[in-house]
Image 1 (cartoon, rainbow, N blue to C red):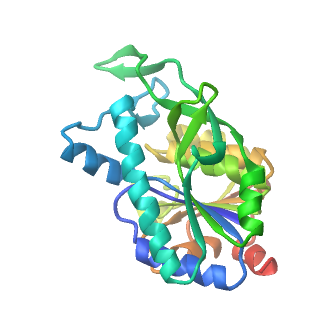
Image 2 (cartoon, rainbow, N blue to C red; image 1 turned 90 degrees about the vertical axis):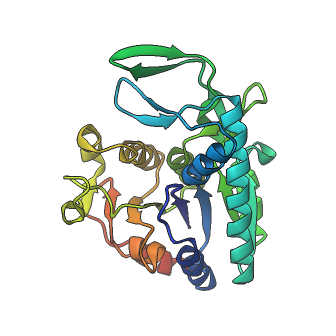
Length: 282
């Protein structure tokens, strides 16, 4: 089985993705899907006159500043995207089951008490933030859905220890789910060709990377790719065999990623295309 994270940035072809997912589902592959919603959230926030704001941490990570209104906008935007994905997959005869990490306490998280943001060269402490870090996965719920023949489609919201809804990073949520289910492969699709040594030059995509090389790659990776590498490290440390960072803009994005197009990361470094593992378990 494998876990797929569909990036939330603009440019991904959701129709091609759904067709690809349906083809693999019909072949007997078992999977769980996590999706983002950053572009949809930005668009809705603009319509509601609540302009999105980005936080840059002292370590260089970029993330959305999530006050309570932004959290609720994110929940609305991802709910819409979730339903559209479920609708299209149902039309393709795939028994998709839409949900968020809040439902059934699927994803448990620790709400971040404070965040540090670099603004105009100064570090500022932010306290009104509704983001969290995943601390647990209700794998029994996922196993129940999978055993019943459903394909879970999950929006990256979680429930805190205090029962609060929080926004969590989609890549790292997918990594936590993949680790909990001991998936063979985690696929992270985005709107770039993979990890590029000289961003945005697609000819510099790093095809193979070992787990030992992830820390060094995180130092020179750009923007959101840093979070993807963090998710990859967490997934591999939790027992996932392979992580693939693939291009969601391709005609068959999922199958291409599983066939080795993009950046393939494994504990050993050199890895056979993940599609072989999927076919072996079909």
